[in-house]
Figure 1 (spheres, rainbow, N blue to C red):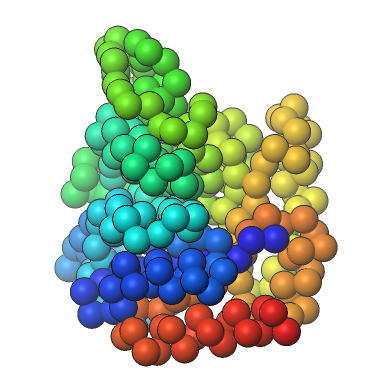
Figure 2 (cartoon, one colour):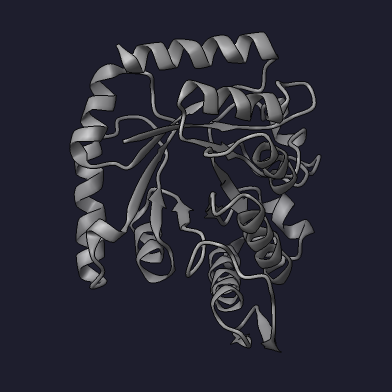
Length: 279
């Protein structure tokens, strides 16, 4: 079971280059960075976790720029979005960005995606909250076509891509693994239709064995091999019993939070977590 971190890269937190270097030196497998283009001031949409929206949500660097700098100072660290908001992203541009990063990094990209939760944010990008999952699906399918076909085309309700050429292709073939965030049965159905992995969050009581049973049933219903579907757990607690349960259940990767704090605080947390894991 791999161990990584998720992080909101901001100008007031540890520099993402130093964070990436520290993760690789300490044996962490991956760095997942979060995305929000902006936060509209209306705040009509409540924060899913409750309470006030944390400062980091409106101060986050672009994830692909941050991951590019992380790629330049590391050799093995996996570079991931956690998550890229595909309801708010142009699929042609994003396909090019992901392929470019995958080439420059030597094939280290994991493409974590989601449809988002902030209605005002996605409305500013021209996406209606009610259709965000349909938009996400079509954009990802168009990107997969661009990555895998010499002359790609896609026609849908929200995406209309005329026959086009887009190079370079990603270094990973057929493309970087696409993992979808969410916990519902609808999420699992989408994973089986057009993704390579499931990316659930730990919220409240969460049983790894039960989660893996749900995944396997969804895969079998979709006639996909459950072993071909990776599972990355987002927000895992630093708890030995929980980590053992994740490993025994067959979960591929757990992610801890590397907070948007200064260098010394973050490095201390990384050391404490790795020491606990090794113990």
